[in-house]
Length: 530
Image (tube, rainbow, N blue to C red; front, side, top):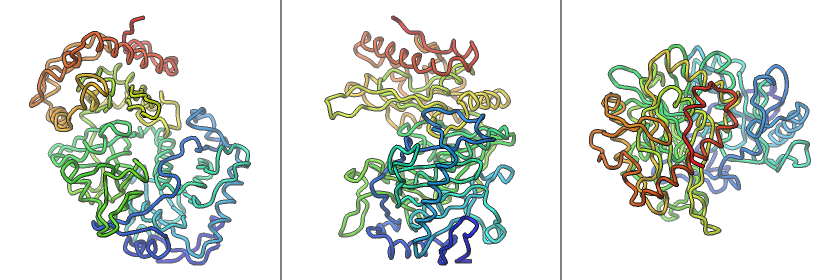
C-alpha cells in the first residue's frame, strides 16, 4: 500500500507515501531535497540544516493527568501547558498540510512482543522517513496490513519554526511530548536524532510502569549460553564501539529493556558516531554504512563522492544510521537472556579511575545514579582542564521518572540474576588529559573479553583508598602496571590531588540524589580530603 489517509491526525494531504522501500526513499530524497547525495559506499547522505545535534533545552512534556505525578519535573523534564501543546501541534499540522507530498512510516519499538508499542512517523522529508525506517523495527507486509491505530505518533514539521513568543518557548525550536495524547510534535529542528530519542523517552516512561527496566546501554550475548552483557555509557565512552564484537552476538547498540524474561532491544537499527571512522578501527560499523543506510552531515569528496570521515567542517557530530541486520553478528530477533555482567563505561579525562574495577551492589547503585564521564574542555579561552559530566543512569536527558526508580529496578534485577557489575575506564592513564595518554582500545577490548569469559571474576583485586571499590590488579594480556592508576603517574602527589578533586565532584553531584537512596548506597561514595 503506497498511499493512505492521515485524516485521523488532522492531515488532509492527498499524496502520502507509507513505508516506502529504501530505494524509493532514495529517489524521493534526490529529487526533492537539495544537497542530498549518494556516497560511493551506497549510503544516502543527508543534511539536517542549522541543527546538527539534539536541542535538550527545547524539549517539553505536557503537564497533565494521569502522568503528572509520575514525572521527575525539573531541568530535564520541563513542564508545558496542554493548550500550548495544542497550539504547537496545530502549527505543525498546518505546515504539513501545505506540502504536496508527505511520508509516513509505521513500525515498532521493542523486540519483545509482550512489551512492544506501535509507532507512526509523519514527516515531509524522505531523509527522515528513511532514518526512522532504519531505527524502528520494520513490520512485515502482514503486520503493516493489520497495523491499526498507533500507540505513539511523531509529527515532524521540523522545517517550520515554533513561534518563540508562544508561552513556554525559549527559541524557534520546540520538541513537545504528550503522554496523554501519545504524540511528539517537532518544530524548528531537522535533526533526525530527535525522533529516535523521542521514542526512547516514551519507552522510559511506559516500561517502568510495567516493572520493566529501560536502559541507555548497548548489549551483546554469548553465542553458546545466550546470556547477555550490557554496557552503559555516555557519548564518547565506547558503548557502540565495544558492542561491535565479532566474538559475540549483537543485541543492540543504544537502547534496551530488562524484563522478567531477559533483555530486548528497543530499536531496529544503530546510530553510530561517524567522525574519524575507519575500516581498521571499526570494520563492522564501516561496512554497515552502505545502501539502505543514512549518513548525516558528513562531507563528501566532490569528485568521487567518497566520505571524508575526518572532516569536521559541518559538525563533529557526524552520524550514520543503519538497520541492525547490516551488522553481520546481529541476533535477530534482538532478544537475549538475563545479563551475566553489567558494565559501566566512563571516559575519565582526569586519569584517576582504574581501567577496571568490580563493584558491590551499593557501589553499583552509587555509580549508576552518578553516571559519570569527563570531557576535555574547549581551548577557545585557553582552558585545557577536563570537565566532569554526570548524567543519572547514564541517560539523564531521556529519563522521565526520578533516577531512583530506574536504580531500584536495576538493583532488583541484579539481585535476582546475580549479575557482576564492573566499572571500566576508557579514558586517560598515566596522567590527565594533556599529560597522560588515552587507554588503548585494544587493551579495553581485552578487559571486556576477560569479563565475558569469566576470568576477571576470579582475578585478584585491591581496594581503592579513595573510591572504595575493588580494583582488578591482574588481567590476561593487559600489562599489570596500567591497572593501578596511581602507579602510572610519575607525580604521585599530582595523582592524589586529581583523585581528591574527582572524589569531591562525585560527592557534590550526589547530594541531589542522597535523600532518595539507602544509607548503604550513600556510604559507597568516595572519601574526600578537605
